[in-house]
Image (cartoon, rainbow, N blue to C red; front, side, top):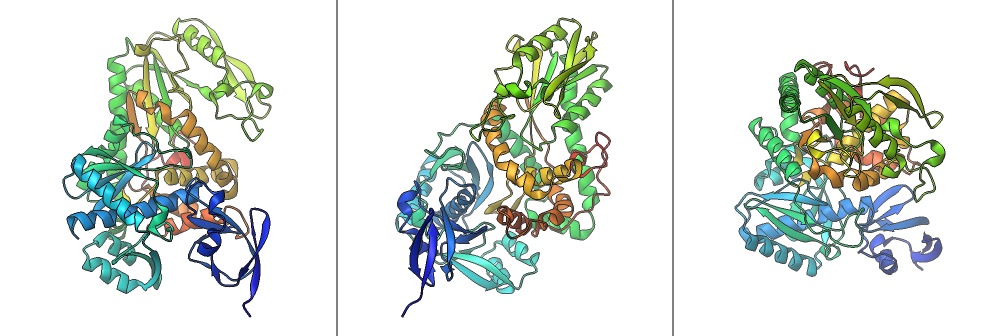
Length: 551
């Protein structure tokens, strides 16, 4: 007689045969999800649907509206896109997943594209999806995996295998092709119907899909020229430096020449900021306010202080202003959906006071500006300020680019800078490095060093931070006069040495264990880089410490 086990789903208890797969169980609950179920959470552990269930447990099924499900959905679509391209244009045709772009992923091909070809790729992907082909998980000897990827001339993936010390490697099979993906995968292509493709240029298209932040539709594509051009500029520079993926970076580290790369990259970034300072100085008769905004851990503090230093070198006087000092009093702060104060919202700012004081300062009036006391949740007025001739305001804050602030001041008097830590390299052609993950690693290190937070506290707050960025920061990036990349091509190797021990502190019974494990697995792909050669004015010092602008 077959043994039964009790399984709890959606707070109800069900009986299933021991050894049944999550895939089979999920069929009974598909109608509770808007999109196809992609994976499951058992306790605090994520499981692919091919996994068997052998003991009583509580199961939560996830679709693409969860962050975990979204990663699986994107990885699955990438595998389908690779298969479609090779089916249409031959085994040497390939794609390279580049970076996020307008709630989608920008992908380049190694052959010339046309709009008709993008339609062909989309239709071929649909055919593969409609056929509901199995995506099979396999455990392969690492050396055999290296031989396979070398045989199909995927040297980046073969290189990834070489820097992995495990005896066995997890690969996925779709049809007759095998591939390596850093994220988990769906069990079949039939679960990936929700996507679209948009032609961008003769070598690139955008893969679009519903996201955890836009759950009810696929967003119409909107091109972001500033962001796209900055990504392209730094990707082109990475090609010149012959560092396009994790393997290339690891080769530099193991060759003992990493310090040269650090100096080159830091010089490039400093020169970019110096160019901005020169442009502002040349237009000092018009530009009276420099506004700087960017998502969490993009290095706003260091960049604003470093820019101020460069502006002073051109003979300008600088008055720094933080928008954080203009929060409403604690009892006036609006509440979020969770019933807690929503400090990410623009409504949490005392905009009337902010707008009036900035206008008064520009009018050469004397103003008593506030300093926000976060311990008591109130503004304190201790400093009186009056601008001198040739003095420029440098204002930093998450809402600094919002069109709803400083509406009483002419646009020509403002210079807007958008900051983001853009990642310039991939793991390999089909596995990108998320800019969001890069910033999260920075934040974990800084929170622990400056606030004493453990990893779980940072991970707990990260989802809310990301929602705030989507609502209050990203929509205004196109209004920037300059987009500045605060990311550094070498930084993952440095962050690894600081953040890896912290991630290991997350216990298996923590709801954030799986996220910590995912980040640890990601960091294993990189060799460590010591921080000795990193200059004191580097943006990285804002996070790892010992910088000239920070403790």
